[in-house]
Length: 267
Image (cartoon, rainbow, N blue to C red):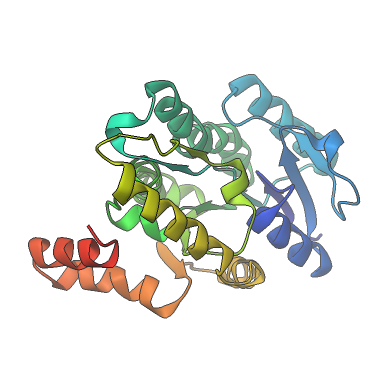
């Protein structure tokens, strides 16, 4: 039987690219969206799911298992961006980001693990971010939520390995998707202490996304991970310098690395 794949946040961007790629490779793909009725011409079924709601997660997972009888691969892709000076980001937006980027994937993993233990097999791929490997100015909350998911994956991977379940992270760099359209960003406030540096960096952040890579690179990477019988703990996909920045963080003294980032962001 073909493998059954569930992808959260699959109505657009990276999730949609992964879903289409796997569908054309013969996988049985189910995607999720908060509003699937608004999505036209999807090549794979879309199920309603809001990762911030435990009941919504459970209903979606139960629907896939009832339809297919199994669940081989789960891709935690749903996520939201957030930018702004930490001092000026409303607490409600900080909490919403963690509900979506961190607690949401945990909820999905908790919902699918019983089925995977029953099967004594399964693969969970968490889509994190290269930004999760370092604290980036004006992206502190995004870096923190994605970095937390990286560490959860490391721990959970060891807890479930004896059940035949594999868990891995894949951290993308900047890709040309519509993530900026759904991102919460603090407005540049006239007279704010952060007006000039944040205003300049907000444009830079948007330019990086607009000029990012093709999301099909992520789809091909995910397909490669699924085909691997013993996937690694961490994967990075993106431009050379984005991936190399992680290496530099490991080998450079903290203050040297901080200075390098500040020069890059003109701070």
